[in-house]
Length: 372
Image 1 (cartoon, helix red, strand yellow):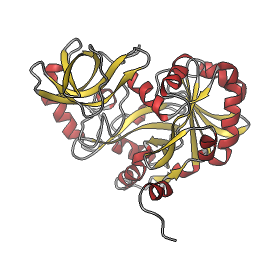
Image 2 (cartoon, one colour):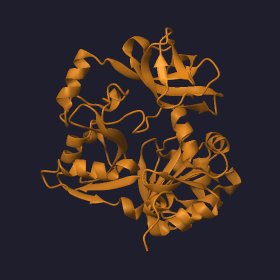
Image 3 (cartoon, helix red, strand yellow):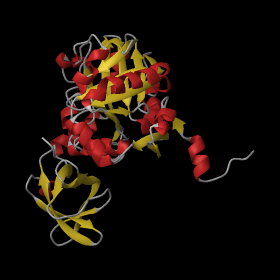
Image 4 (cartoon, helix red, strand yellow):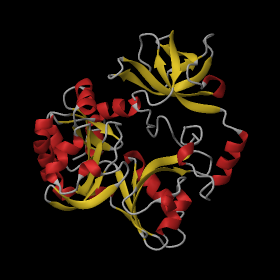
């Protein structure tokens, strides 16, 4: 039978995470995101945001991509395709990095995990899994062993100030003693070889847990049970976005993309120009000459919510840039956003204007993160 065109066909083609039916049963509002059917919220974005900032929440972010890179040439390949210096990693350490393209932009941002001198995991954005896989493979000239395990893995992010306490009964690993951007592979909730990572995308502290899909339902339930006395709740992608924006964290496709330089996007700290990598010469030259625009954070000085693609203007109403991400901050109770502006407008304290429904509303450049 022919499938109907439109929304039904789109839903048919969406990928589903291992816990899709669990989220539906919990009453989550499911939406298409990066090719997956994902929970955007369970109750309200505001309630879920405050839960993570004040207590602890659990996100299912199993749509993210994971690639294993192994063998004696594994590090050589990673060094070639990423801007950060992966040679500085030691076993059990994680590094934030990005894939530069050959035009001076960014293919994707990612995390690099080192298991050993010849075993690494790259964690990439869900919307870019195929793109990133093809990109890395085209540079694999020396025989590094590559494996795309994205479809086999589930990933839970347990975030918030009470995350360590809420999870401690499920593992012998001393979670409170784990340093930021470190990980261990150990038993968790009765499942062997879970990757327990002290990382996250909220700025609230917490952990990310990588495990095989077949164990996802039992581990999810055990985490919620262990976290019940800590007011843990399942959290959707809506609150994930407001949480990351309050920290000034970039979202690929919004704040960084194929046309934005990592230097323009405030990622100079992960761009190690002392090593050779794809198009390093362009970025060296750009740093020497100086960038023309810069990604900045701003707070609204008048009531109004900035949204992606809204115009940023000077006092005369002349366009000088565009909002890349914007929201009403639940923690601060005011509008906040990110956007690219000329260097002359990029200093903290600089006044600019956001065009909201044909009105120019006053805003001010602030130093990131928005929430300290």
